[in-house]
Image (tube, rainbow, N blue to C red; front, side, top):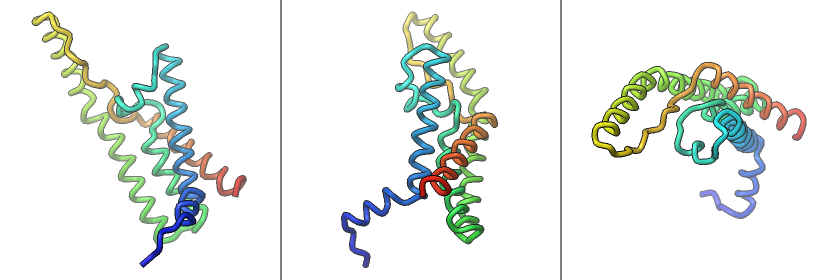
Length: 156
């Protein structure tokens, strides 16, 4: 049995793989907020937890940062291969969600608009951004690579 001490938490939170994933998450979400503020000129923090999509893909940034970090620290190992396929699966899912739900989401918004007009009530609109485009995924990959590279070859 492993004893969990304060040092255990220090080791986790200072581990390069954790740092790469954490800072990729932070950078990706920060870029997303800045782009939402710039494009929509409105308060964007609410959109971070209400929308499942947008530029860049944080899902891609985090899983790719973990995968790149394992590659940089261990090379092509069993863990890297496992992480690579896990990341590929996650990225495939975030791409296919947009393809699957995009057209249905547009129809759902039209139904809500018809019901609003018919019953003179304002229904809550469901979130429109679901999934990611290939461009959003590529930007997430670039963020992950840059952060992982900086942590492994510059900081550590």
